[in-house]
Image (cartoon, rainbow, N blue to C red; front, top):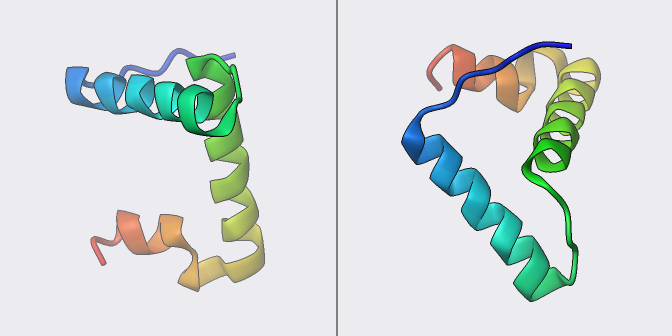
Length: 62
């Protein structure tokens, strides 16, 4: 278990995503579930694409 701090803007973006998922896709999920799914997606991409993954590219500033 970890605690992650996000900026006010990131928190608003996360809440917006939650509302979009509920309003446009009929998915009632909490912010924690969205974060866990996003982490799973990014880690799977890293595992399968390695250096070309979105995580590596973003961390390198590309």
